[in-house]
Amino acid sequence: MKSNEEVIKYLNELRKQQKISISELARKVDMSKSTVSQYFNGKLQFPLNRAHDFARVLGVTTDDLLGLDLSKVNPVNKLTKIPLLGTIACGDPILADENIAGYLSEPTDLLPSGKLFYLRAKGQSMEPTIKDESLVLIRQQPDVEDGEIAAILFVDDDEATLKRIKRAGPTVILMPDNRKYDPIVVDQDHPARILGKAVRVTTNL
Image (cartoon, rainbow, N blue to C red):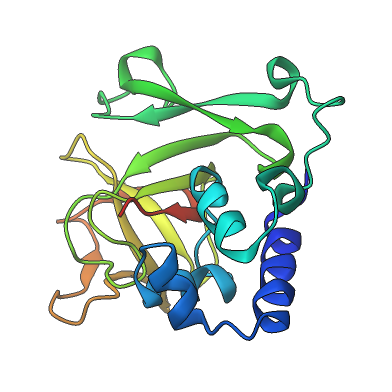
């Protein structure tokens, strides 16, 4: 199976050969231009469940687009179940059974390394990068680099939030991407810990 980058490269070649703009492609697959643009510039993962629509518009089979050789595919061995976190009980390990609202199966070959979990984004503070109700894949780790988006749990809360990390000396500031929202300073009055780094966003239309 092709990687996300290989699928996008192939889509780009096909649409250029057929002189189809991103706007026209988006219209033909009934998606917004901004969403399709984000697939092509790597900001959003290409949605496997929409591969058929793109393949149909560009005149190829879904198997060809995704690089599937059905004689070699064994779904049982190729899928990984990733937990979707809900509320997080105080003091429990992050991936304790009590914290897991369900599981999502993903092709193993398309997943990054490390211990992974999903969060469902709530609210509009990280738009346009992360839309409300998007699924965000998180790699569990205790810290992230400046400018990266982290899943953060406040001590007095039971749901993780997503914010961009910014440091000013010893001070950690949680930055929203939406300018309508104010930054949050992590301090003694608002203690928090980093659960992991956001590595992928899947948006439902």
